[in-house]
Image 1 (tube, rainbow, N blue to C red):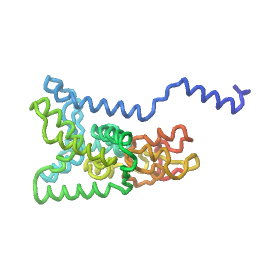
Image 2 (image 1 turned 180 degrees about the vertical axis):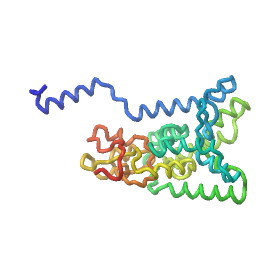
Image 3 (image 1 turned 120 degrees about the vertical axis):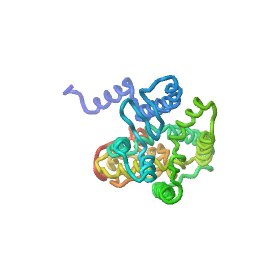
Image 4 (image 1 turned 60 degrees about the horizontal axis):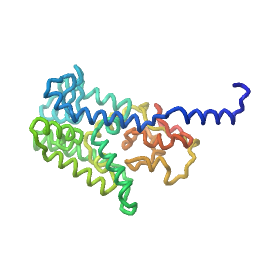
Length: 296
C-alpha cells in the first residue's frame, strides 16, 4: 500500500463506497420515526389486551418502571396544584436531560406529528408550483415562547386546567388512537391534526413546528443550557457551494440556513440531519459535532 499514489488511493476509496451501502441519517431517522408512530398507533389496543410493558401517551409514557413526562405538562400541573412532586420532577427531568445533551431531537426523531408534517411538506414541494411557495425566514421561537407564557398565565389566573395540553400535536396523535380503539370513534382532535397538515401543505411551510408548538419551548431552553451539546457544525473552508440556494438550505424543511447554526444560543434547529446528508458528498462542511460556538 505504501507504493500506491494518493490519486489512486482516492479512486480506490471512491470505488469502495460504491459497494459499501451508506445508510444516511435520513434513513435511520425515518425508521425511528415510523417505529414510534406505529407503536403509539397500536399501543392503546395492546394495553386494552393486557400489555403493560409500555403504556401512556405523549404527555406521560411509561416504559417498564421508567416514566417520561412532557415538561410543559408537568409545569402546568405544578401551577394548578402549586407544588412539584418528585415523581414528576424525575420524569420531566429525563426528557429535559436528553434535550440538554442531544438538542431537540424529540421534534425530529420521535414526534409522530413531525413525521406527518415532513411528509406533507415533501408532497407540497413535489405537487404545488414554485410560484405558490413562500418560505418564512423569520425565527419562530419567540412566537412559541409567547404562546407558552400566555397559556401559563391563563392557567395561573383564569382557568385551573392544563390548556396547553390541548394543542400538543404528539399528544393529539396518540389520543386519536385511544379514542378510536376505546370509544370506537374519532373526535375533533383528528380534525385538528388534519386541518393543520392541510394548511402546511397549502402554504408549503411547517407552520406548527416553527411558530406554534408549545412542547418544544422547554426542550429548546434546556438544550441552550449546554454549549457542548450535539449540534450541526459548519466548517466554512470545506464548503464548495455558492452562498445562495445551497443544497443544505434546500434540504431543510424548516427553511433554516444550516451554515448559520454554529451559535451557542440556537433556537430553531432540531438536529434532523437533513442538511448533513445533503452536504455528505460536497466536502462534508456540515457535520454533527459536540462543540462550542463556530468551528469555521
